[in-house]
Amino acid sequence: MDVYPLLARVRAKKPLVHHITNWVTIYECAAITRAAGALPIMAHAEEEAAEMTGISGALVLNIGTLTPQLVSSMISAGKSANAKGVPVVLDAVGAGATKLRTEKANEIIGKVRLAVIKGNKSEIGTLAGAKAETKGVEAISVEGDLPAIAKKLAKASGAAVAITGKRDIVAGPSGEVYYIDNGHEMMGRVVGTGCMAASMIGAFCAVEKDPAKAAAAALSCFGVAGELAAKKARAPMAYKAALIDAVYALAEGDVRKMARVVLDGND
Image (cartoon, rainbow, N blue to C red):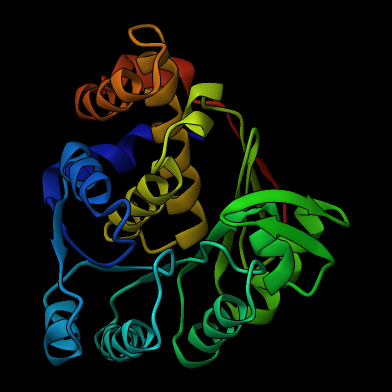
């Protein structure tokens, strides 16, 4: 799969990506969106969230620091996005860790038509009904075959489902599965890379109608940047800066040479 054309499209179109996101990583989400070539906006208040979504190219919802009031804003913005054909990405941070997170993630899935649901293996496993264990926002375990779990949730929700990890897996609602083997172990040692990945997916969804293809391309480009950043920095804070810079500087030759994406066919 040639993922570079989607990155080029993001850079050319500069879509506005509205985030209702995690307070811990809000800066990183904005920074990576801008580095990829898109434009970030963070509007959390319910009084303006729906209006802001109406002028955006994509909406990213991240429940990392959720409150019931924030989820209300997310649902309001999500319904506005649905009405205007704006793709919505849900980053199900910590689903499975507490009853509130799991319930609110499922509420969003039930009330908003999503383009992509993104999470680690235990977050997605929980939402798919598999036996899974989440420790805070970290994946501990999940029972079952990960591609099958992703496909099950994709079929049930109508959204593409992205499981991030050493090997990223993206399942589309039609049964297709992408496997992405880009990235570096340092990405798992830095706070915020999961949230940044969701922002990348949002930017790519803003310019590509196929959400599974958009998610796979976004994760591959982000992973390529992660590999390049590791050549320059090996400590967490330095690596985070190098990662953002690497996304900004991604060159066509590097992406086409380094991207490792495999597509399995439909069932």
